Image (cartoon, rainbow, N blue to C red; front, side, top):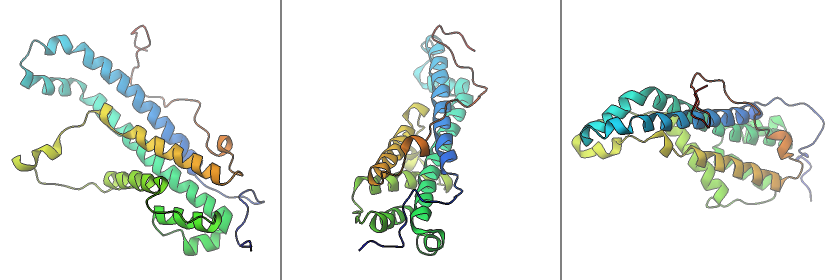
Length: 225
């Protein structure tokens, strides 16, 4: 027997949600990150000849000093992108849950549970599917939100020669921000495959513009503009 308290996703009414804005902002921040990273790599190349003339132990500090602003900008945009990814995922889960279950029920039963538990409950109620905690969609979303928690709950650790290896600097090019986007897009595709009433092109629009940044980006000829 169909649960009469579960509504169709496409039903009459109006709902206000910011998930689509967060989704767009995530992609804008990723575009900014990639632009900054391109400039950073170009700038690093300009110092190669000069660095080859100095002892190896000084090269890293020299390069860090001359590219510190770009590295900071890259970290900022990557962090912003990651946070917006999580906001978009959780925002859509809340949006979908309220539309399918009604705002009163959703707030009372699901709204305050953890992100993966919330998703599993929606699958059970709306799709009649019992998600296993070891399924990829659950583990991947848990991963991206665990990383978010590290970002928004920064901790202080005492530095010593014994744990120095834990504080190795990570170059912006090594940040795993693209994995967060793979997880977000995997979530979007999975939800669309579960409910054909979700129009991916309508509900998840990617931006048609880039963030206007003060960083000068070289074109293919190497000219900065």
